[in-house]
Image 1 (cartoon, rainbow, N blue to C red):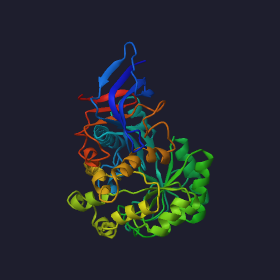
Image 2: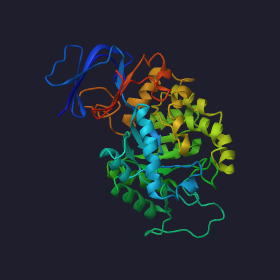
Image 3: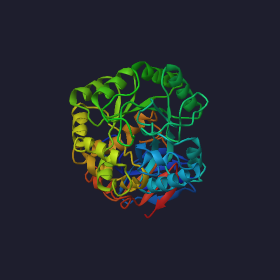
Image 4: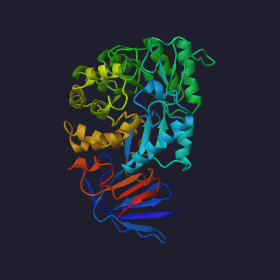
Length: 411
């Protein structure tokens, strides 16, 4: 088993605003064995002098769609799986180079992609996936437009594609949850409201009946999983939190009372800011459908207020980007957007320990502590003072490690 010592490090552990100076981190195999300010000496260990730089947990993107290769999501869901895989490989390699050692795929990723990463066929972050998203007919994962008449049905008479499965009624919803869990999903994702990329639903409408959402939560909890829900409007957020959803994705229009309600119920929010900026800047020229461009305008300008309301309410905020197609290169811009409202320590916690909590992986990822995975990055400078160090696509990261394996070392 390989042994590595990272010495002379200034450690941010994923939580504390107090950095640990002059530390050594001992790595045995894929996990951290020890964090000490004393002398760490082990025979045959590889020793790397961090030179006083910041050593911290690898970043986590809790809202990603690496397989979606086009801004026209309806078209993208019809591409061949081999094409999906090659696009995802490019996206995941870029993410790892930016310091993201974990990705939570919130729709479309599957066991094949996760296995390819785990076995080293694809170089990228560790992948936790939802499988296909659950959507009602005409919901945010129903990519059929008004002209669509014929469609392929799966065995349960539910329309499906690479992104989602369309299910209506308690029995079909229950089947769909069980099917994704059978295929290894780490969590279940539902579409709780309309969205920008779908062709027929307004952004501000609620989706799924309450009893359907409750069945999703029930089935997921029985399997020791949790539910994430795409929600833009206040009503959708409240309904999903009331039904027991753990992770509210986007929360775009959330107000302060709803943010407090979410906090009181023990739910989490994962705002996704950078996708709005990226779509505004490049969407039209890169093929974002006209209807989606129109819906995008409804969400612009409210993102920073979303962050402010969640922060004022003390809501636990995750860090996600929601980028699709060629916009994956905007991933690190999320740090810059959040810095307009939040302090660096809050952003860092979101991108490490809070995301790990959301994913029910505390102590394994998003932290720098004994027994955690050795998913680590070294930063030239102090990101607690300058969060922009993480916003330049890995330029200020001389070392990137995942599971004890070094992917980049410029020290």
